[in-house]
Image 1 (spheres, one colour):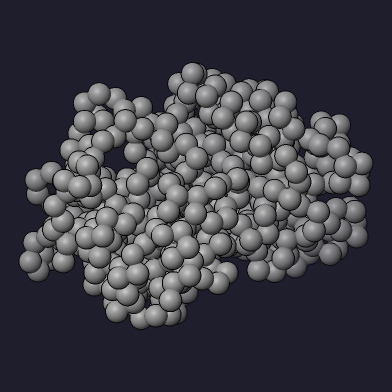
Image 2 (cartoon, one colour):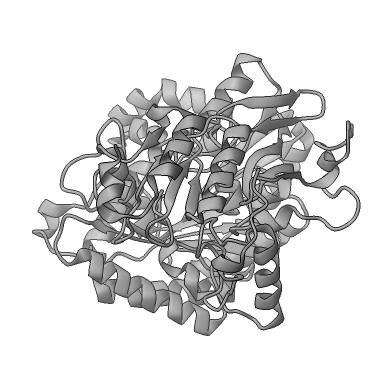
Length: 554
């Protein structure tokens, strides 16, 4: 009945039959393409997945975990599985049953007046945007640049970030509904109080706050979460700037940091180097380079001149009343005066005018303004919470064929590893990280693509992309060696990552009392050790032996 499992003798047929009785036969998958497809991500892995379960309700999740706990079968939950660059759907450890939550896609609560929405793990950025648009809502969501099909909860639990004043996602959520590995249910904050009216608007509740325990952990499975939404401002404008000087990164960070710290700049500020920008505009210039990699500086310089971007390029949004935005523009101009080669502010009106006159401008100047607008429009939208998949095309940078209409980096064997260090919001720190990337990646044969986000006035979140083609023999090994060296050197300099891929989750320092506390929590909420083994767990983390664990499953 279950050939994929009977051969490997991993899961008892009785457990599969129990899961089938809960979910139905169509939602317990052990054969066909879906299992091997789920074992593929954007870098080399060898983990095997014996089965995939597709629950549709919280109650089904509880029952599935209860069964897994009784049989001591490890399970690995994913929301929509589009965690590209960090592992996608692949579990940290082999032989975990995949618990795919994409069918749990309900928006269960919404308040226009109090500006919040409560969703399940399968609700995507695109779904929430459509939901708000259909209601002509005056509220904005915050979106990442990944894909409209990415899970809101999945990204938030990884502490992902976006572009608006609500860009630090984990800081703008509350009321987690969590299923423990035993099948038990808990709610955080005031959610645990019967009929609490403030559960969706006040995060802490009373007593210890538990929300943080379930982000980047394997302590429980979040089945609902409340997101706070941003009231649409009276006025919004974006600003874009570029500098042609290699040494300008530190200068730009130090110029904008005071404005971010004092609240003049309320949204995230993004800086990207020329390698990052060229990968967003086009694929690798195989013909111009005669197939040689990495891209050389002379050719990159030519592209910068032709396509009108800088060595460093930045963007940000201005939000508030008309007077507030006007004052913010004045202060941004002062802060960047003499430090950038071009500074451009863009409003809806100016955007419409530019689109209208792009053809005449091109005829007069030879500059194809329509291409610039096509590149800027999705970023302009992201600053207003509009999801886009434009940046996903950059994952196809080294591929020989253009990105397909339906992009799937895993299936298309795009190579991508992200290294994501965090640093204080000072130019000297940004410069150290940039220097490490610029030195290490080319030595391994990759372009040092770097983006830096000033997520607050105090912290920089950096993403260094190792982009390649997995179909080229040996590239997986080169990319992993590059990643390992980069991460090691960053750690030595004092810049650990804000987010980990599955290949490095076992490298978290145990930290003495820190590790002991994690072990105690894990042993309490998951005595059989079956939920997402290895996920964000120190290598020394110990859980009570399975043979001694007492299940409290439902």
